[in-house]
Image (cartoon, rainbow, N blue to C red; front, side, top):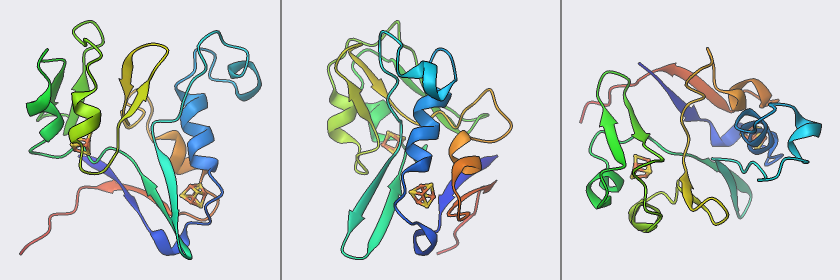
Length: 149
Ligand code: SF4
Ligand code: SF4
């Protein structure tokens, strides 16, 4: 299955990926209309800056996800077939335990909806929107790498 990878050397910190993510998860899917939606769509990834480097951060869909273990409402599950952590909005109680335990800071709490926002790899599209939006090819969408140690 495919996963998102980042080449930090290529990242300009332009945040085009953040904007594309917010638009992709808006109701209208349109940049200009999305700003007028009642609940503003927020990006599920963020680009952090440190010294002279930029680091795009999003959910890694860990195979042993601590966010799933921490969820008292069983709203988060790891789907082995899809290779991703799924979230059930109806079960979620908005306690933010997942936000607190994620070691990558990959979950954004949406204070307005009381739901956690996490990368869903644009699951209904062939390719995540951030990949298309990145002007330098810093976001790579490819089959999972197996790291041998
Ligand atoms: S779109 Fe690409 S270059 Fe721009 S911030 Fe995101 S990863 Fe970096
Ligand atoms: S939210 Fe964090 S802990 Fe959970 S799967 Fe994503 S990266 Fe891993």
